[in-house]
Length: 408
Image: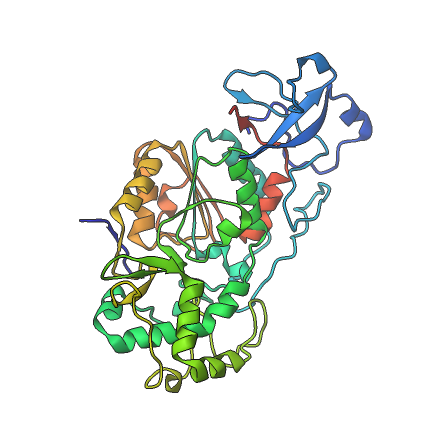
């Protein structure tokens, strides 16, 4: 097989959330000072200062020498997450940050409990070489639906296009590209949520060794992460004949140039934006396309061809029934076998390309944790399973205390 087939901080003194905020007297007994945030060219390091100033390194980096890793203590300072308001610890989990939500896209889930937050914090803190795999569940709070949740695309009887259908049928290609063009503006309007930013902060701080995503929306990139895109991205278009690839915006311009009146009619339709309740019957799909009437693409819609060889153009994504490119599959599998902890976020793992990574990590002795609303294919492999919205729990985990940052 050339690839994978896609089928149907140990903290020095970090305390968990307490019923009451420590008093000023208790806090003042801590011999260590405040945390300082230092930005470098590659990452954000969270480092500590103490009353022994002569022990600090030069150039503004307040770090205590430590063999193996830099340790931190919990103080009133917190790692900054864009869009996330600061909060004090209470006897209940902190209020959820505001996130952009499409009520039809986000599956129902209870707010994360204090126990959930603390357990996930400990999972992060106990890992030395962590892999994070994200699925559609991290983007539902951005207004992009998933496939398999109770509110997902499959619940309405939707069936995504397969690789074989796209390759063999010009009609199927017209249908796909017309719908994808129509949904592109709305898809592009989606913004990363607090979960994306929390992961980006952890990645830059060195707490995530490898991030893999099944998503094709590039919201991780916009938040500042650099994940391995297991299933590709809709932001790139590729020729099936010669392999030439180019950016999606250029393809959108080509479609508009070939179909000026059609494009004008499509763009005049007000089908709302992510998070709104207005869709005028045109439902958006996980890959960015929307439902539009057959009359909009059956006869008068023309698809651009490759400017190099006149070949067939396809989004650079792994459709159902297609294979993950071998080099990408091998890189992901190598990371899975070498990690000591594997965290699944917002994925049911029903595609074999994702599930086999978790299974390989488990067989290699890694600890598995899953945060997902609903059952997953790997529930029996986990030591920790939490049902919660990622935009609510991940920022709260970073608010618990200061995670240990491996020495760089």
